[in-house]
Length: 276
Image (cartoon, rainbow, N blue to C red; front, side, top):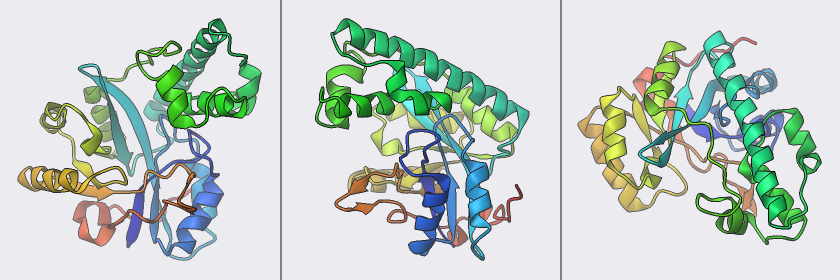
């Protein structure tokens, strides 16, 4: 039961449709996939529908929630969530609305800097209410203001840069409670990238279920440290590619970072055919 448990689609800041993601997962011989778009569950329905074309392929409904704690951004992954629950629907609608408002403010800041960018430049994304800084960064690239995504963030969009706007904040406690309330498993996303290690122990205190141990940006030292913490506190150990549909060295990361669900008893027991 090989599974990539961290994948994004066009419903957040990914470049691939849910259908393309599923087809690619099957080509890479995966048996399960978690759709974990940022602050939305809108792509899950299409992913489940596409998965019906393949025998013995499982979709794990998920989400990646952005939180803030002690001035650091922390991401929470929710797995096996009731993605049509009124609780998650109401929250994601609010978060998506706030994303659009934030995008408008960022664009206004860019305009003040003499950069010619408007909402119509990201109209397709705006219609889906999935606007994020990466969408604005891509427009900056297209218009020749920057060479790549990293430069867009380093020059304009990161915290402390001239176009930055603070986002709507969700507390770690609220994120964990929400995931648990909709029957999900709460996991810290890419904890090896968290600067303040105390945040990991704070999450453990709040009842987090596990950590994402395997991730493309984790160094070996991160992996070993996280394994030790997870074992000490009897936590679920997950992993995934965090694929956004970008080619890295000519190939997609999807399926290159994975876990075996059979080695995670709690998750294995929750695998089932998800109905539309």
